[in-house]
Amino acid sequence: MAKIKKLTGSFRYMQQWDPCLIISQIVAMQSVLYLTLCLIVAVMQDLTGSTRTLDHIFEYHELHVRDNEGRSIILAFVLNAVIGAFALWTIVGRTKLCLDFSCTYHGIHLLICWFYNSNFPTTFSWWTLNIACAAITCVAGEFLCLRTELQAIPLSNIGAKVDL
Image (tube, rainbow, N blue to C red; front, side, top):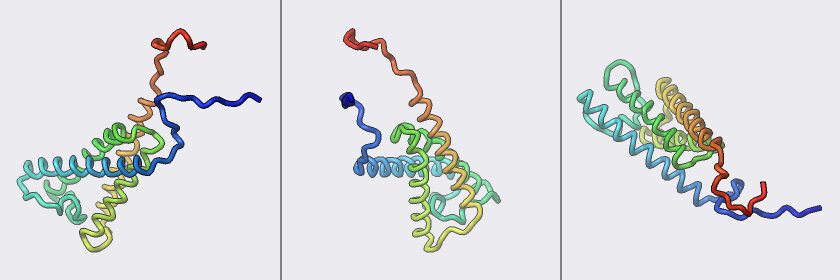
């Protein structure tokens, strides 16, 4: 039997578990998504004329469709979910990990909201919005990562030593 030769090159093994990389990607995702959410909420609050407060991000009673302020917060979360897809594509870059990182972000957001409100979120609108945003982030992120992964690998600049 012929031994399989290990390929050496610039790519890492995809099955290699690197906790430092995973933790730094989680921190980067959380930072990017909370930064963009804060910026979008700030712009939306300027448009509606309401005051800026962390309640708009973490208080689950703020999510309602009764007035323009509540609708602007919902729109900010949906826009942030789309930006989250681009963050997944940029930071993670792997289709298989999009669901994991999307659920991790929204799971940490659930814990922060639970801590901020001192009780578990029970409103239907909060759960609907966060599940919809997680789905948007995951599906759009997987789509972007899949498009990158399925691109053809150019073989034109390979030297003459390669025998195809």
